[in-house]
Figure (cartoon, rainbow, N blue to C red):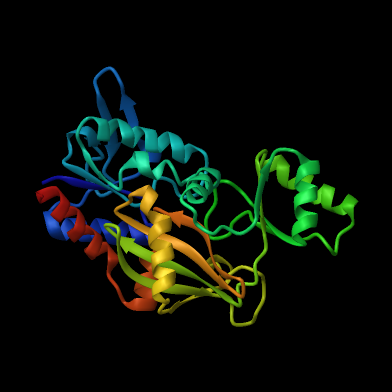
Amino acid sequence: MRIAVVGIGGGWSSEALADAAAAATGERLLVDLSRARLDLGAGRLFCPNLDGRTGEPVDLVALDALFIKKVSAAYAPQMIDRLELLRFAAARGVRCFSDPSRILRLVDRLACSVTLAGAGAPLPPTTITEDVDEALDAVRSYGRAVLKPLFTSKARGMALVDGEALTPGELVLVLAEFRCANPVMYIQQALDLRGQDLGVCFLGGEYLSTYARCKAEDGAGWSTSTATGGRYAPFDPSREVIELARRAQAPFGLDFTCVDVALTADGPFVFEVSAFGGFKGLLAARGLDVARRFTEHCLKELSG
């Protein structure tokens, strides 16, 4: 059985999954979609194997399966285009874990939030608009708000705005600057995270484990992201929180996913569902080798 991992060369989780797949199949194939070439006429999707000695491209359509770990080194709109390449392979019978058509529903923060809202997940108060005046009204009504790009991870590009500390003129300047890079503005009321939020993880739709992202020990910054000094820690959520996260991830139908949950004085809130995160958090906080478990899950699905 020939299986390639879609990921980033040198990326920790991509390499870990490629190692696990190689241990199970005897062949190590790791491909980066930034180097892919789709030949629509021939019905083939070529990509060089990052571990290959000759650099000869692999036809992804000729493989038995693809394990999708990362489609881009950074969250960006081209992720949608790269997932469409994988959708081409899936349409020709290549089993993809997770299905790229399902991943497409959550790489854009707006698409993810609309699906979550439709499923009844408790989202923080959120406004999406292209109009600066409407954005100004939202920030002022929230008091403190977080501006979020539609394509981002680990809080990159996000900004905390204090609508009570800034004048209307100052707020307009902040929003206009954000809008220059983000024509569609995603604005969410800032929650009191009490120093942490959770990654509640599922494998094959079944609960696996949970880790917490905790703010930097020096208390600096507002985000719990590990990119800004946060750290992973074990956490045992209540049954109610697990069920809340289970309902949030269910509409997406992913083989592995991580639901970001905040526990606040007003109850739990769901931020987003991720198709790409969770491997490192579960290893650091729980000692779980998710790459191996994910590989075992996929091979079981393939043999079923």
